[in-house]
Image 1 (spheres, rainbow, N blue to C red):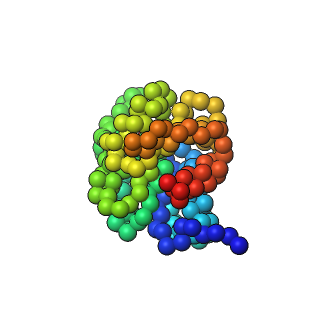
Image 2: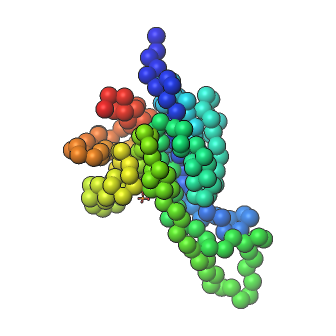
Image 3: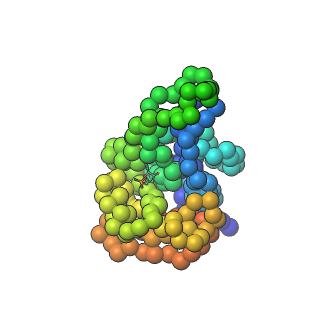
Length: 216
Ligand code: C5P
């Protein structure tokens, strides 16, 4: 007997770092592995949810509706389509803050005149903030990766992004954050004391999060 307490729930998880196009063969990326988001999606599936994973990381997890994207703009488009019908959004993707203003049609070539090459960037939309501003009954979870003032910065995000929960981690600490299998999380929610969880695997973080969600 396996309990499936998320049966009937629609869950969207976003995962991985966005790849902002420079030209047909190049992008600006970041070190996110997508592991935290993938674990969130997998455990939600195991608990019976109907899961859509919008990801920049190639994966073929069974029993999950997978949408592969590259850029923040693509992620935003797919999320805006799916968000109205969802019960829970877990926004684990590491969205680039900036993208190139101009995308070159052809591969950019080096030549005698461009020893210094400049790419001008423009701000990406804040996807979480934009989508959560339209929220009705959806439960919205954001992440905050910080290297300093973890709690103050995460509190700000909870309010400014209209999230129900922020899972914050200090990425300058050992075993937390990008490209490792473990994470050290502080969970923040409105009008409650922050909860700090011990260092644990990302899969265990996902289990603990869904357990929190079911018993909150
Ligand atoms: O503002 P910051 O990037 O620290 O916030 C992190 C949270 O906001 C994450 O949940 C991330 O997925 C989301 N985010 C977003 N769009 C951006 C930047 C971050 O949805 N442009």
